[in-house]
Length: 109
Image 1 (cartoon, rainbow, N blue to C red):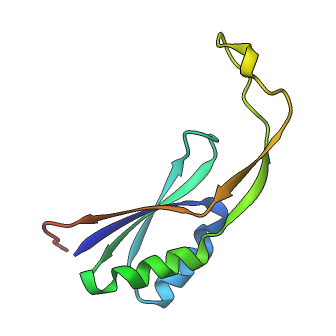
Image 2 (cartoon, rainbow, N blue to C red):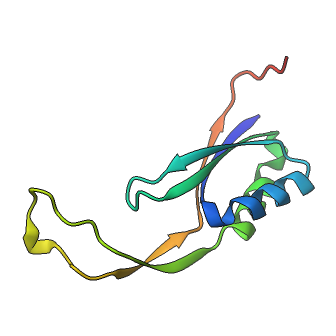
C-alpha cells in the first residue's frame, strides 16, 4: 500500500475530488498554504493499493493543470531592495506536487 500526498491549487481541488470519488478512491482533503505565493492550496491524502498507484497519478495529472498567473511581488522588508521588482510578474502556477510514500501498516476502525 502507498500513501499519495498531492498538493494542488485550490482551483483544481473540486475537479480532482470529484474525479477521485468517481474512480472509487478515498481521499482526505486538507487546507494548506504555499510558502512561495502565500496562496491557498489543497493537500490530498490518498491511500492506494500498490497496483492502483499509476491510475491515481493519472487522475491527478489530468485534473490539475498548470496555468500562467500575474503575481504582485512582496516588497522587501529590511532585505536587499536591489533585486526587488515593483511590478507584477507572470509565473506558472497550478499543476500538482505529488509524493508517493510506502505505508508500513494501515488500520481502519
